[in-house]
Image (cartoon, rainbow, N blue to C red; front, top):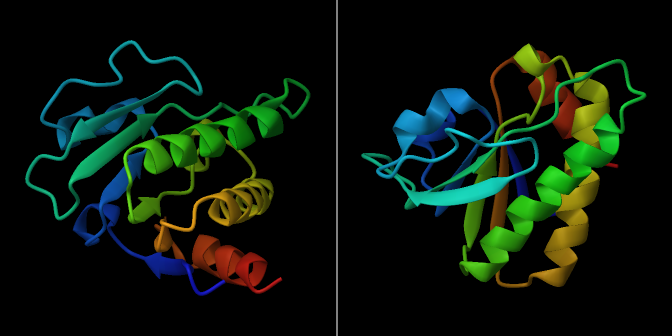
Length: 151
């Protein structure tokens, strides 16, 4: 678990190789336009623009529609797509927001379990990835991540 860290704060301030942008709102983070016509689960990577990170990985996470529309499976797919891109690009450190939480309405507790499970599984397959940071925007989400990482 030493490769997984929890941080509360601004993801754009983290010194990592790549940050994940999980909404259409962060197109401005990138030097190249990305995500303008993205669909859920589609991933793209761009150069970062005036950030500590070198890359921004863009993905549009699923919107919670009550849980019977395969939302959990779709969220897991998003994490897998991101981790595949990180491996292909030889990224050594990456920071994730709480994908699909907040405006997209995904229940945070469920999303955190999926995030930890999928990232841990991907880490076993990618020994070159040295650090994954889950960057949280509030104390409640931070506590949920810390609880799940400890399990």
